[in-house]
Amino acid sequence: MIRLCNYYNWKDISVLSSNSAFALSLAKYVVEAAVADDVNVENIFYFTEVTGDVRNPLRKIRDTGVRIIIILATAPELIRIMTTANTLEMVGKPYVYVAPEILSTDLLIPGTQQK
Image (cartoon, rainbow, N blue to C red; front, side, top):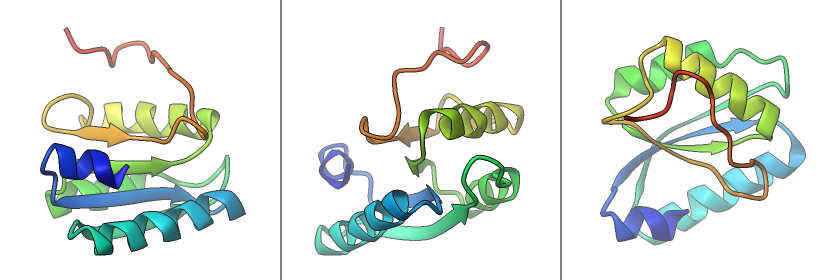
């Protein structure tokens, strides 16, 4: 994920992570890799698995001005995150969401596809 950031010259990112043990370990790795590759992790927010609030963390990310968001969540959580992001008008340009394939799947959420 950090290599992708370097490839596109994205130097400021936010991380939104579930608090599952696996996601937490990935979050630690992402932060360490970012530091090593000179990518600034502006902020990192955690939410409770499955039922946790994602609206407030997304608003805080929006308010920082960071537009590259690393999501560490399961597919059902990712659906909830992207649906919430869509209601906050945080889907599409200039936002970019990156999620590892191991935690998520290719999802098409109605109303969020770019034309």
